Length: 316
Picture 1: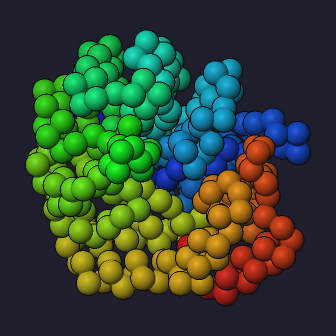
Picture 2 (picture 1 turned 120 degrees about the vertical axis):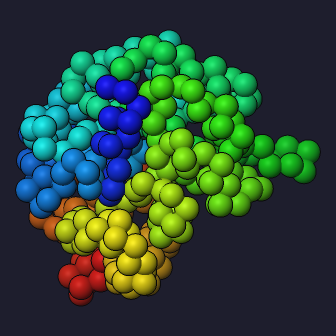
């Protein structure tokens, strides 16, 4: 497929799937199939959503090379051509990224989310070479994951290994299979800098400001509410029809202050937001298991508190 055809698929509410584990922390591909089927039945479809496998929320970096392909296959089978599927490649070198991208394509993914190779300490020229090589080697779409928060301080300056500058995205304009950018504004630059390349790539908001993103030409957002999945699809419809006031109101009801406070407090203890999201799925009847160690599951007291927030009608 060409860029235009691929971009028609990488739009809407991008749903990062949790990776289900059994009690021994083995991947449960059967449950992943059932969960993906449920979401497709809820209305996720080509043109309004995507299913994303092995992302950060899905513990992609914790999955072995023999695990994620079976997981991806389960989701592709469940989607059954009704909803496009994206897989994730997390911080690998050029050769291994190309190898994984070709494998994902063979298994039915229409796109891949690719994080910068941060452990190679890349500069902006390295970023261009890395994504250019990927684009040349594959026939599916690439969503570039800008990771400005992979940073450290040195000599009084903040240095971000995953930061891709707006002008660097402009340099990627001719890469046929780079079709989207998962956008968080780079260190020291404004969110509106996305306007430099939003005419070229589908800009997908990464939990920053999905309404502003759409106003600036964005084509979707990351983050899905397992409590009310159809609400995310309604939100996308409102954005597409330019009804931003209604979208803002729905967005406000979608994220409760109680949940925000709970998540901020609990994620400081262990494992980040993924352990909370997996707990929400469990409350909604999907026993996807805890995160793999060293992260720890929520305590019984935390689960009771979260259950009260979720069942009380607030979204997440």
